[in-house]
Image (cartoon, rainbow, N blue to C red; front, side, top):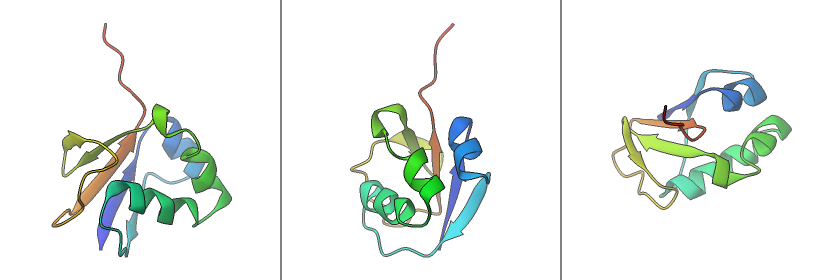
Length: 82
């Protein structure tokens, strides 16, 4: 079981701040494919992965990262400096 967290417009599109997911995914990319199949809202939220960043257990990573041992995956839009 993995805790999946959504921030900013991803949270708005999916309609929830988080969910617990039972997954067989080995990578973040595989998890995203599973999430996209959950609902139309999930599919819309993940329709442009160039606009989505990811962290595993609060460490920034990328879509090819392994989920081995992960407890939490967070998805959020790119951060802007300022």
